[in-house]
Length: 67
Image (cartoon, rainbow, N blue to C red):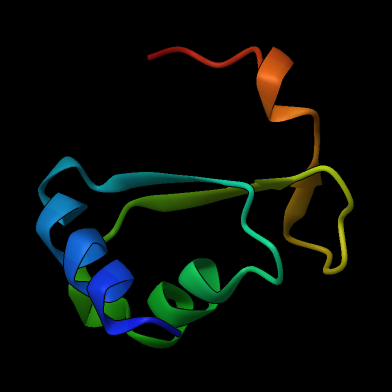
């Protein structure tokens, strides 16, 4: 995984919820699942095609989630 993406995620953890749009193979969620000390409340992983059980299959252009 690209280290700059991890740095951005580490910066955003103060919000404790991460929404990974176009997550591909879900590396961000896997990272935080394996590092529980990062205190992330929840990671939502979305992609057009779900390749893993935790990836929510959705068209992110029409995603119905709160800001």
